[in-house]
Image (cartoon, rainbow, N blue to C red; front, side, top):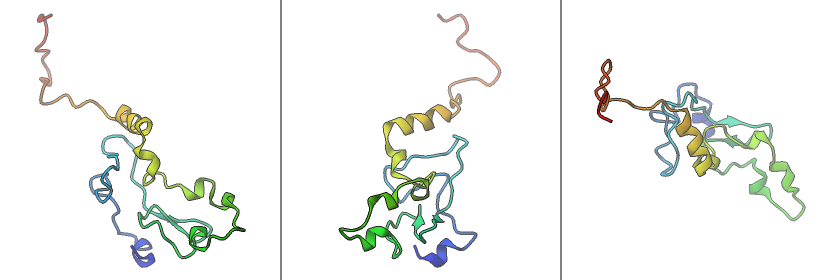
Length: 117
């Protein structure tokens, strides 16, 4: 994705609150967590666009003298398009935020299991 597309206000980065271009990306649908678009941090690096290469990134200009701490902190982490969401702990977090889907197995007004146990 180019910088031009990132700066356009109507560009959509998710489909139905998922990132379909990432095979293991979780779905945020029904969790109350809103998918957020990519952002440009103070170093001019686009975070969250799934391209992972940016001409301004310290990774692209790495030398023996580069301090790795330059790439630490929240400005390097995207809130919804981050590899951390693929961990089992974070997937459980998302699942715990979803409301159970009662239909098609529950009647909306009658307890059909009453007296069966």
